[in-house]
Picture 1 (spheres, rainbow, N blue to C red):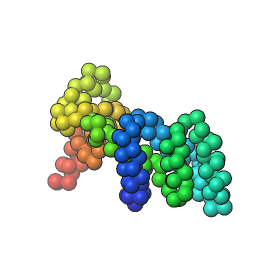
Picture 2 (picture 1 turned 30 degrees about the vertical axis):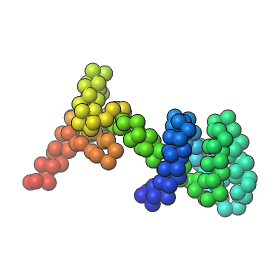
Picture 3 (picture 1 turned 180 degrees about the vertical axis):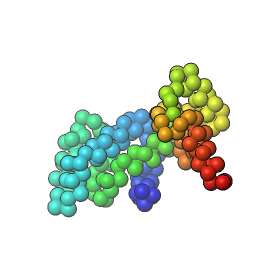
Picture 4 (picture 1 turned 120 degrees about the vertical axis):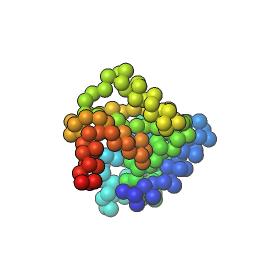
Length: 176
């Protein structure tokens, strides 16, 4: 996975730089999300990974699929990915782009996993506390995992805060 991220990084950086220059970050975000989604399709992935499919035919097929969804610069970007054999990196490029965009706009996407559903008031309170500790705006995605028993697990980028009962039990077991 890290190898794919390493290969995708120059493309994501170039797209992000271009998006900043043209003030089209949201448009590029939507475009990369669309390209990433179509690359998840198993049928299309089989065609893309087939060495017998001619590059020109692949380009024509993908441009036809994307005709109403992407613009001129994005068409050129798609052609570049096909030409360089990097089309399968689209999901990683989209992910890195979103990280660069979030960093630039001063927010962080946070996954909050709890044993039970949070109310809107609890979620807002949690977001406020996280925003203070991270010094950024916070976009929370909440989910439920009953195996936590109680408490919470917070994932913000590379940081993980484990305030779950199951995590505390595991720490206690290690000490004993």
